Length: 168
Image 1 (cartoon, rainbow, N blue to C red):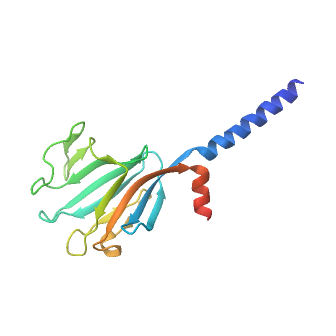
Image 2: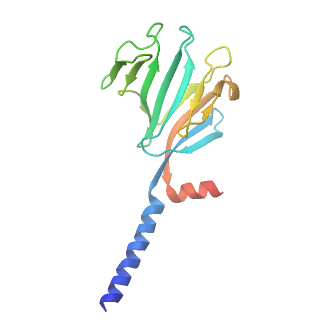
Image 3: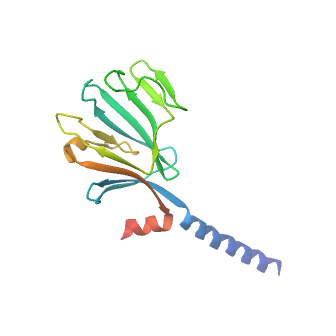
């Protein structure tokens, strides 16, 4: 009798564990063009980040913005730049810090937290935008999508839905 109860309890535990795992949310970074077509869908683990970088139009120096997908939002985690002239930040935002590094001026925290970012890509002459994905892959946006508008958004779906989207 006790063995039958244990087997049934174990079976129920396995069943509900499977249901739980299939319903666990999977967060992803989705990149779409302005016409709505999907360019990239990248699953994002907690703590993973992606970076968008460009050459400042006046200062002609690199600006790097690090983002994370957390709780269904794209959050600006850190912004790095070499000078703070010509419209670049000079002080930390609320709940943020301004850090002077050996090479970079860094704003960390207190930044943007939105569902989607509208991002204008430059070209060879202006912007020279690129992106570094969570896996470290670098995409030269200014070569692949010159002058286009891209949308970077946080999306959350169940693991089961994510599996179906990868198969079909």
